[in-house]
Length: 111
View: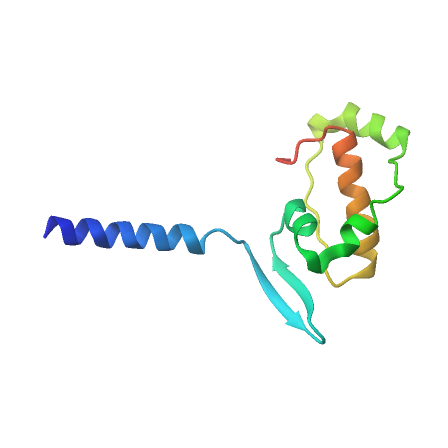
């Protein structure tokens, strides 16, 4: 009986872990256009071939030195909550540059 209970708990635990990995939903719209709904990370945008726009919009971009300095100076008092659309052209343009600014400023991704 103990083995059965242990196996059941183990199975439920593994199922919870496997289902808890993604905090987003993948939506396919139109002609294989992928959109994500939920909480996503920069790594998702970098590693998913559907979002080639991310790497393309980073090419040749250098964050403004004044913005980097200001962000470094005030980093302790800043918290960010960013909303974007993986389908939105404005997000395609702004989000890669925004992440570049954060990285150049050594801004914590935990904030």
